[in-house]
Image (cartoon, rainbow, N blue to C red; front, side, top):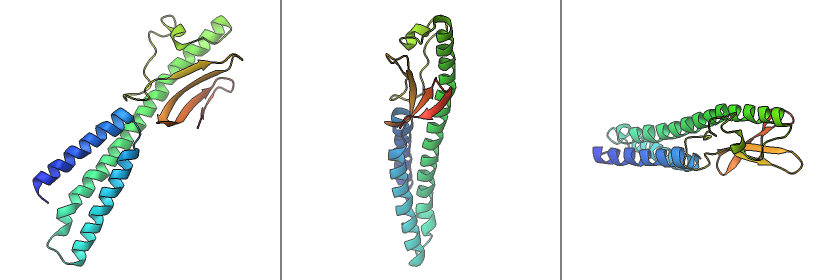
Length: 169
């Protein structure tokens, strides 16, 4: 494998990391690409070993490493983002509860919490999509508060009646 090819793969992996972990926050594209590239290169290594090619592992093993590292990195960034969102959500939930205690009803919107209870409503995550908390007060006084852990589904929702987290879908 030529050094130029390695640079191309490293550049592609970096672009995929930024797109999938920081813009989309999904990991789906990375999983598909990483599984494909690892499988293809492992097959190539195995074929080279069977044909007794000169040092086939060195030709492809680094590509397996690049794409396996890419996948692990994207999963780590998504996991960290979701942990950050949970921590930030706890402060918003506390403010919502305090608002209800003080006003005998839930706030109409999250902006009602500022500036008295929160300086500002935090972003849930460091992504360009699905980065906000969602809040809706329903006519029957129920409240829906959630953030998306794996776009476009997997919404982590807080149940105020039972004081616990649950999955919406």
